[in-house]
Image (cartoon, rainbow, N blue to C red):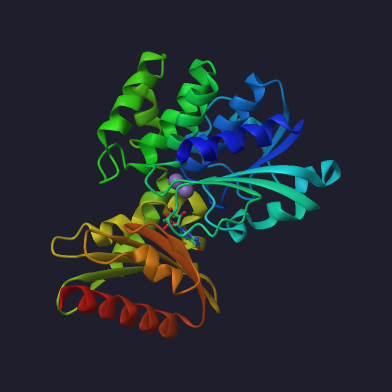
Length: 328
Ligand code: 5GP
Ligand code: MN
Ligand code: MN
């Protein structure tokens, strides 16, 4: 099944010459590693390509090979429209944000992803929910096409495996992931350096924002739900950027006895961004999907319109009822 999907992907790239490679807004290590990984694949195949992301690439990923070539949608207006798009790590078309404006009306999309909530928006879909990362799907694709594991390609794929498994700690850290990671280190990936850059380095703004977020930490009476807020004034006071709230939600989920950790972030008076993390009981991907978002069982998100109070009440109610349903 996976092999057939990958063969369709190979035909997709064989049949065209110029591609737009795109991933989700506020990209994480898998999104960026997979964007750059597809770039390396297309380079080896002798294809022309442009890489794009709606958001700026967080500084901690800028050491990745060719990272400076990822452009913004505004920057690409004059080169649009693109008829062949390769989307990676995007569960639905919305996740690509403004990049969609660069697509031709009759666009052909190759959708490579691992989210169970992926709605198969592509012309060709390679959606493998069992994969630990989109980078793992790309790993298999590279092997199937018999491409060369250059240090650059190996570094991009390794970064996706590392970050989507939480540093080889989450439940998706299978023997297969570890074997693939070992093979990539054998191909000259500097594992310690990547870990230092992406896991062991924070911005000062991140810590300042974390301090403010921790002041808002609250727990439900039964201690199973913990939540925090990032308010607009905190973002302004710390000068934090999108990348600076990455990881803050984990502090809520990590509290002993908590199953679901939630981070609410005030985008504006009427828009709240919600991040979910769960330990083992609630499938937060399914829960986020009922709120218009999506993600994985243990990590998910959504954006809700409403005032802070309304959104908090609605979300806490949903999480509490999901907990009751599973426990009883
Ligand atoms: P985060 O909380 O780090 O922003 O997102 C956690 C996970 O949920 C990621 O795997 C991300 O792809 C997914 N996710 C977050 N927000 C959304 C959303 O609005 N829609 C969908 N489909 N997935 C999301
Ligand atoms: Mn991602
Ligand atoms: Mn991913």
